[in-house]
Amino acid sequence: MTNTLKAFLSTALLSGGLLMGSTVHAGLFDDDEARKAILDLRQKVEALKANSESLQTNQNAFQEESVQLKKSILNLQSMIEGLKQEIQVLSGDKEVLTKTLSETQRQLKTQAQMLEDRMAKIEPQRVSLDGLEFMAEQGEIRDFEAALALFKKADYMQAASAFADFGKRYPASGYAPSSVYFMGTSQYAVRDYKGAVSSFKTLLSVAPAHPRVPDAKLSIATCLMELKDTKGAKKTLEELIKEFPQSEAAQSAKERILKLK
Image 1 (cartoon, rainbow, N blue to C red):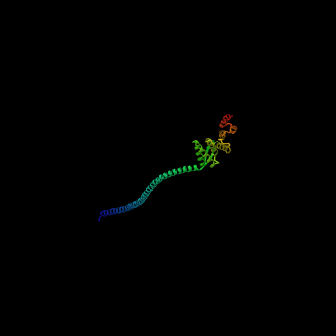
Image 2: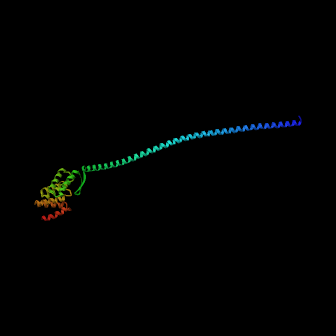
Image 3: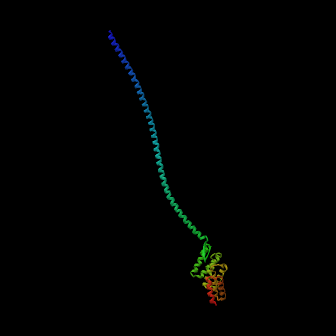
């Protein structure tokens, strides 16, 4: 073997060794990159898997919440329907209660009026007669007005009897003085002059300050004149003028005295 051949072989071997070394080194480098890429890919897969599991968990939770929300909505709707029905019932009850209340108020008003009317028939009332005011029972008012109605109808005989009965039934009544006066006037009308004088004198005795007293004294004088008791009539007229000088009866008395002379 020549030196040239030896050199060529050596160069060839060296070159081959270098090439082989380079190839081995390149192969080793490619394996590391692949492993790294695989590891990266594996990590990404794991991450995606974890994200997928988390997403699935969230989705499951969302679905559960959605189910619960639907149940809540259904319950709420049911409650609303129930409230609507209750409102309708209450509205109906309100109408019934309103009608009942109205009817009750009407009945109470009627009963109150009936009670008031009944009490009015029982309780004393304030009465005004001949310028005087006093309390009178319903019976007094009824009986006096009945007797007075007879007097106004000119049924003097019955009126005199009715006023006499009134005096016996209600001797302490506020009507008593007026009742005696109208009884005397009724007696005078039927020409019961003595009875009239007695009635008028009773008025002077029991109620000397009564507004009818001046007229009663004038009526006494008139009755005495009818009975031909001129002296007694004149005396009565003089007393009337002296005791009640400002009364209309006194003015009439003055005129009658002149006629007596």
